[in-house]
Length: 114
Length: 118
Image (cartoon, rainbow over all chains, first blue to last red; front, side, top):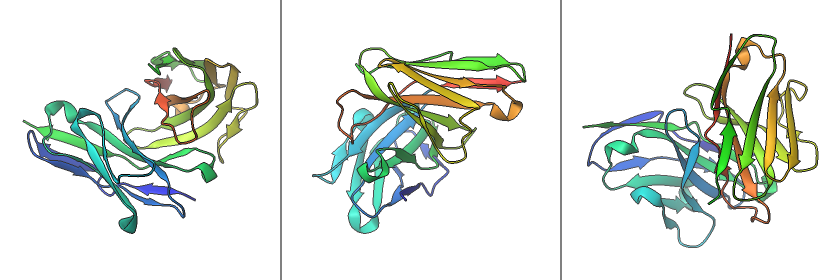
């Protein structure tokens, strides 16, 4: 069965500082991977996705993520955070063999200090 | 494009009553919709997968008689929480995959429904 781990429950960063959110997955084959962001009381918005090809993917709002097969990781990064980036971030993994259902990590809450 | 509308955004109901939550794809047809439940400060847990015109597939541990799912059209799926109890209080989120979308296409999420059972 596929699983996703986000080791950091919450992270506090200063505005303008860089941000990296960790995501580790467990799956036998190559999964497809997503990062979503959720503002309080809202649904999820897709930031970026990886299926194949270039392991560094660019997303919206200045985010990028790098797929590292050897480390089973798909970490999310942003060079300079804005106060509006404060939210909950979820990494998700899916696979065709798993019926195309997404499994979500536990989430990382990002707080941005002025 | 690819907007999913969920209604209501929040609802308060008395214990023992039933509540219906609607999930609509506004500008695309969704053959598959997924219903998730999210407890405070926790991740999303898939409850069931709903396919248009067929019975929903429930995840292990989810009571199908309590959480009734209907996907009668390509743009509407409903989740009815029957005989609600306080422990059913949660944030329910639907998501949809468009008709003809590839298996690895991202899901489009509604804004969720906050259910409080008193």
